[in-house]
Image (tube, rainbow, N blue to C red):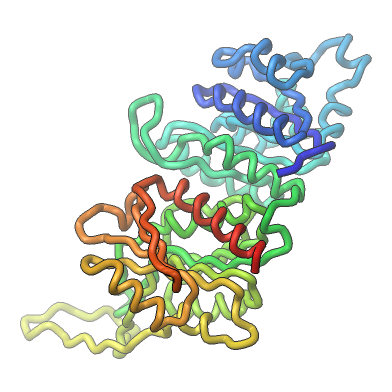
Length: 400
């Protein structure tokens, strides 16, 4: 990533995750960008101005009212001199102030005064992240054009588990690069990614579904965007945030997913990571099926459209690289290899989901299958796997 001549105003607010801002500064400067830091009073409880200055090589700003600073630059000019304003970490408190337009310190005054794009990377306790007030604040900020790099799931400093961990510095750097239009190896390429399950209604209450969480597909979409691709993510019903810098389309059924994918074409890359239901109920009823003393009602099924095969068979308009996923419980390589031939795709990512906790979990262990053979990848986080896959795609596309 090349951030030469790009200026980032980095606001470091209070939270244990503030230490990751130090690594982010290192990554930005390594990419050629310049960083000016604003440290809040709460942020100074976790990192020092000296550490920020040592890594950024620039003066650190902390106070709203300073005659020296005002004569040299002033908070208005400081807020507009950057190409991007990034808040890392963004606490629930600063998100609430941003949403309400409160400016009671240097950081929030800059955020209200800036005319540049703003990116926030939230980090907080899972209960705070899931609180209706925080959810509403995020929604309001997103509607105003603020870019949000969502937190990840895991164990936090407080000992609780869930969403709220600050995204990794590499992920935040990628989002910054995408927001600034930094060129990457997939710049100018369009990728379509499907993710999550589909829900096939039986009646207004019940539906057919599976255990897919969407974590892998969403991570792949984010990783492709980090390499400069324009990404369209078509997602079934999930409980995870949309990736930053990605155009996300939300659908429910397999038929809706196919329609959305076809509408998003043409594309250079198509990755079908969604766990699409193979069947749907033929006899869907608009009323709830009542439980009676009689035998259970018969459920007649109809085969759903095959999204992967449909995309891979588009002839001259076919994406250059079509990748499918194969979730198997036995004979992993043989079943996935047969699927590669049957679906006419270029690669298959095969994983064994039989009792391993992979489907719906945070880690994955796969075999990459191509016409040339198979390659086993060790168990890793789904985010790491997405980055490895995106890098392999970029290398392949560059020689296509």
